[in-house]
Length: 211
Image 1 (cartoon, helix red, strand yellow):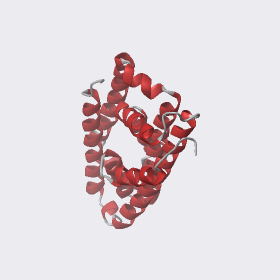
Image 2 (cartoon, helix red, strand yellow):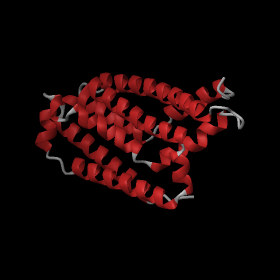
Image 3 (tube, one colour):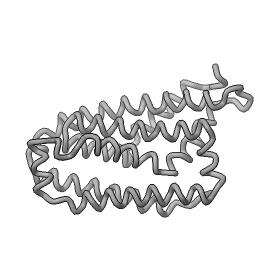
Image 4 (cartoon, one colour):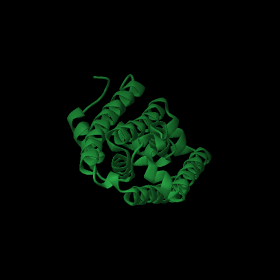
């Protein structure tokens, strides 16, 4: 169908990749502890939407452009690194009282902000674009009549399964962290850890080289 082969292997490989701990997992866990199930779920949905950007790009060939053009790669890399460094720095210098207020009113950290941070950490990461470009074609035949559609279907399956896993992770973390959310100091340090994670990811993206 659509030139897709070994779909079972694709799904299995995708699930293994999704459950491998990484920056996305850390972000979802951190927001789940801070804001509960809703915060973690919104973070997971944001990350899923960011991945969909790359799936769409792979389907229409923009990821191939990033792979072939060092200029395009560098532009995306600088934009992504700059955003992550900025977001991370803001988290690191956030005032303790702001975090403390979040223990009683989760609206102090708007869910739309949590969502868009999740989107941007993926959408502005050229490494994710190159991952989809390298991974998806392995399961599409060379003579497929509708390669773009095949890439889109595979990408949607990958993101859908990954989002389900992330939502489950958010629910587990939120349930396990009710006591932590009562501590303003704990929430402050979680915010700082997330800020450090963003900065580390930004530095890593800035150091990526086009191949």
